[in-house]
Image (tube, rainbow, N blue to C red):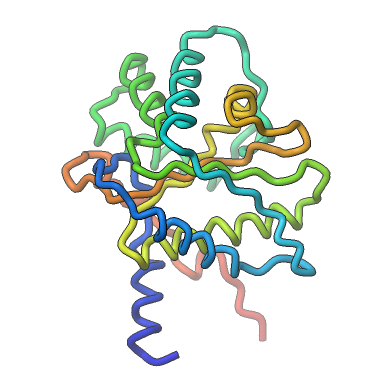
Length: 227
């Protein structure tokens, strides 16, 4: 790989961040397919390639979003498909979580206790933030944690490939909270775990939420140099 190619890869990695408002500009289906082909080059243990991906067409997506938004008014408790976060946060994770939340909702003008503002943002999340491309990822339920690591590599490869092709993205874990609805509307069998969605498209440059740039820990904060 020459210096120019390395620089392009570094730029795609460094510029990628979660985008929470998209322009309506359509994305060529051929490009979406190419991004998926590139993501499929991600490594996996013994080449199992355990990822499963669904690309939502307009009718399917509209039906899913309608059902998801309607569920926001249902007070019934929901059981998450899997536990993404710890039951009790501790430092340094608690401070990091709080800061990114405060920074995001500060940009959105949503103050603590603003339930209408929170609902508005949750609804936007369930609508893939208006992105022209909506994806849903699952993994077979009988697979082990190694396959989840493989799925993570697939997701990251897809996000970086998209960034390299001039598209922005947002991986969305919220759909695991509504897995029953997602499963019903997308005909996903019980043998698969609803892991997350991904929104793809061009970022809306004028959206306040897209000004969020989360802080990253310096290398020294998480790396041990042995010998």
